[in-house]
Amino acid sequence: MATITLRTASDGAKSYRVEVRLKGHPPQRATFNRLTDARRWAQATEAAIREGRHFKTSEAKRRTLAELVDRYVREVCPHKKDGAHQARQLAWWKDQIGDYALADVTPALIAETRDHLAVRITARKNPTSPATVVRYLAALSHAFSVATKEWGWIEDNPCRKVTKPKEPRGRVRFLDDGERERLLEACQKSASPDLYPAVVLALSTGARQQEVLGLRWPQVDLARKVAILHETKNGERRVLPLAGPALELLRARAKVRRLDTDLVFPGRTRPPKPVDLRTPFETALKVAAIEDFRWHDLRHTAASYLAMNGASLAEIAEILGHKTLQMVRRYAHLSDAHVASVVERMNTRIFGEGGK
Figure 1 (cartoon, rainbow, N blue to C red):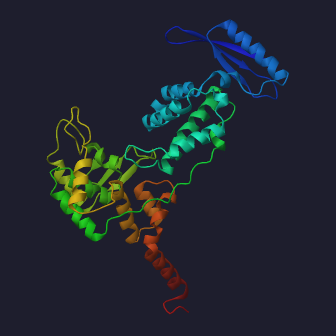
Figure 2: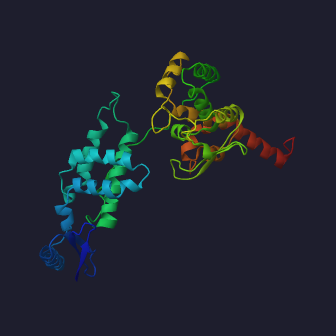
Figure 3: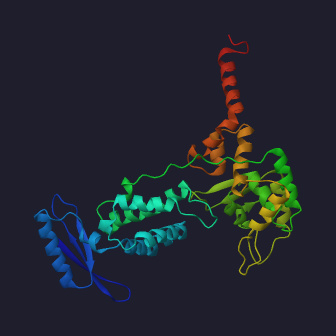
């Protein structure tokens, strides 16, 4: 049977939500501005289902991918931490196949469009990476999932049948001792007073760039020697232990902190935003004669140093804020000596010093 519900928006506009439920069939839903249209659709849909003629919902036939993207960006993205980034990704899909009705957005069409994305040249004159293609597909897939489960616009998510490109193994680029010394020296001589302490903090804690530059003084507890990150990439709270030069640099910075902001590394904008260290960092890399190195590699460097100094993969994952060990397995080869020592201690405990 069909149920019609009157809805009134905040601006007074009225709409009619129709739901057709028949035993043995998934519920069908649609929204109309006129009651007569709602009743007509309900009768036609119910008849089509009874006669076995209803294969795709009318919503999927009359709604386009562009409408799906617009609604998702309007209603879902504002509540997601990376919503703005996803909105840009979905805008690309909208530009490519936005005119298609949802009923016509097949796995084959998505795969074909995926291949166009894979050969696209980025602003930096590089081909689009497999990881980027995966993120674009993930954004589209979630939009389809919401349209399936919550809006009733489609019966299934077509992205589920689309193959994702295989991502390459995670990059492991870290500074050797000579590179580290040259980089820190170049950062100390930089015209930016923020570069050296920011780089030292990143190397000392393994924190991400946005976590370092977005750090605020209320998050820093110099007495307890920790910095507390309330908002991280994986959405969980994380504590950064502070030690050595990083702790001393923050103590010195706390004595001359600005009064118009609580940012540890504020820029010159009004209102203050985190400082932009892209140019000073790239300049320091050139001065230090270090190639193929990015800011995020400071995080890899910290993790690599942890591995080489005996930290287990579980400990590295906890420090970096990874929920699983998958992301830190790239450092496993660096902790071979630590693993060997663990096995050696186990054998000594079982068989004794003499191995008998």
